[in-house]
Length: 194
Image (cartoon, rainbow, N blue to C red; front, side, top):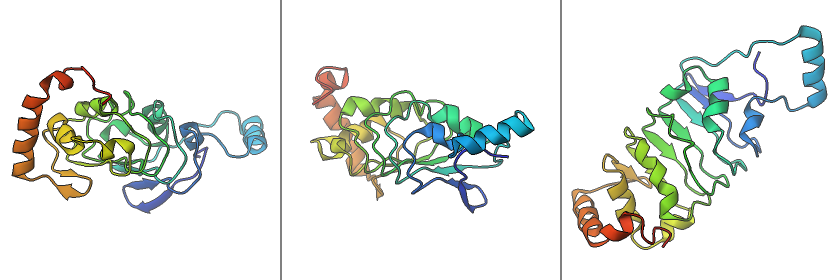
């Protein structure tokens, strides 16, 4: 059995927790009704959690999640081989920073974080650990309105093919390299919050 909020399996390899009013990632594994959980625990003892197999994509969009720190911990309890996930959708939540939460997801190539509360360039730095990332959506975050946003992200993630659902052109790559040369002091940590 699978405790917690039951996901919607929209396709063979997609787990969907969208629009479920999730505030804390722990809700993915906890039963909604504490009395029901206590009764089940008391009568059947401790049951093993059945993990979803062969999942490559997770949608946890349009919820109220603010803390991404335990993301891997809880997804690893829900899906088998969470580190093999290739597509993560955490858009339309309340996430203010990424931190190290995405580091274990080395195979992620598509990441949707649009319409959250990410506000500083420094908050994007952890994305550099996702070496297979090719498609990233960040629009609708305060950071996306900052001057030099697109140049910064293209410089930070040289393997990126699409940013905010728009293909990255050769000219943009050249511009981001030129921009990086001009702003190299800022890129080394000075005034990153700007």
